[in-house]
Image (cartoon, rainbow, N blue to C red; front, side, top):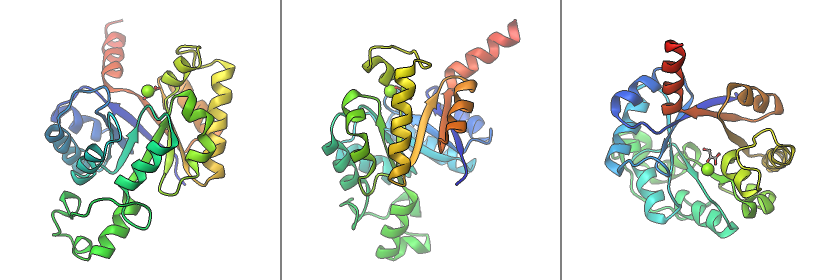
Length: 241
Ligand code: 3PY
Ligand code: MG
């Protein structure tokens, strides 16, 4: 499978999304955990990302049924769910986010099928099957509790992969933001192995290009590289040097 590269969208704004989507990224994570975007704004960002042929993922603030359904109904192609602290949260995520046989997602052909206008949106069984395939569910591993149960979490049917949050994980481990620390690296290797043993994708955030290269060399399926705001800041600072 192709290794993919994404980034985090924090700045907001349709123009910003249009520019990012033109950059050739595989996906853009609209960050509703840390970014203050309404559902309506998020729907517009999703539309703009799609126009630029970039997959719109959404990091949701918490995995409530309402949030999962709303974000999927407006067309998010993947959900990243932060701060997982127990296995039941992940089982609930699958229940809310996937149709049978994997879960119990509420049925409503929505804007992903242009409200049923697309052929595959008209046949309910085809719609549910295709939607389960298209929509990815990625719980984050960034707490000690998630790390402790990572093999079990990665093996849950309907979980498409695990997204590692190395920053929060390092804080939880008492080695804040020391992304090169051997204990953090050992935890990252364990999560990667758990994902691949379960046949799932392993995704991770990298704040530096050299981390991205190291993670790809280790066998990660995907790296979300940087935050838009910090990349913009660095670019201007470099110009002014
Ligand atoms: C973390 O590193 O904690 C993240 O959530 C990255 O996005
Ligand atoms: Mg985090």
